[in-house]
Length: 213
Image (cartoon, rainbow, N blue to C red; front, side):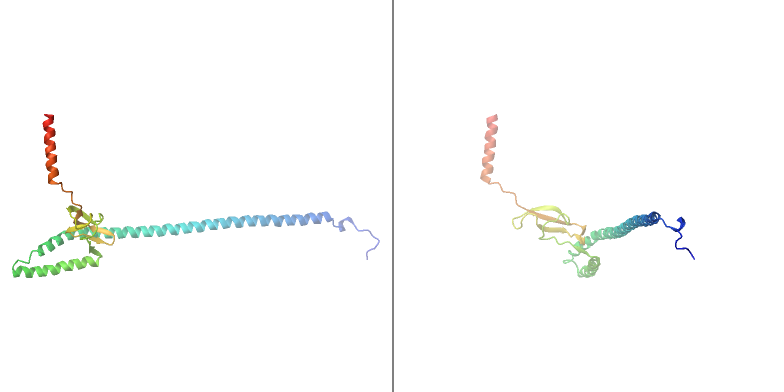
C-alpha cells in the first residue's frame, strides 16, 4: 500500500506539452493524407475525362469513316450504272427514231415494228426501276445542268430561255444527270432594219465615199 504522503516520481507524471505535440503531429499527418488523396482524386478525374473525350472522338472518327466508305461505295455503284446506261441510250434513241418512220411501210414491217416497240418499252421500264427517268424539256426553262442548247430560235411566242424543241431526250437519276437533253432555246428576235432607213444609210455611205474621192 502506497503512502499518500509519498511524492510521485518523474516517470509517473505525463508532460502536457508532449501530449499536445503528439496530437498535433497526428492532425498534421491526417491533413497531409487528405491533401494527397484530394490531389490523387483530381488527377484520376482528369485522366478519366481525357479518356472519355478520346473515346468520343474515336467513335466520331469511326462513324465518319464508315459514312465516307459507304458514300464512296455508292458513288462507285452509281458511276458504273451511269456508264452502262450511257452506252445503251444511244442505240435506244436510234431504235425509237427508226420506229417513228414505219407508218407508211408494209404490213410486215409494221408487225416487226410492233415487236420492237414492245422491246423499247421494256427497256424504258427497266430504266424506271433504277430511278432513271427522262428529263422534262419542252416548254421548260433552260437548265444548263440538265439541258444542252444546240440551237437558238427567235420567237415572240415565248420569253427568252424557254425550250421550244427537243432533239434528243435527256435522263436523270435522282439529282444526278445521266445525259443532258439536246434542245433548242428561245430568244428575242433581232430588230428588223427599216427598208427606208437602209436606203438612207446606203445613200449616206455613197455620198461619204464621193466626198473622200
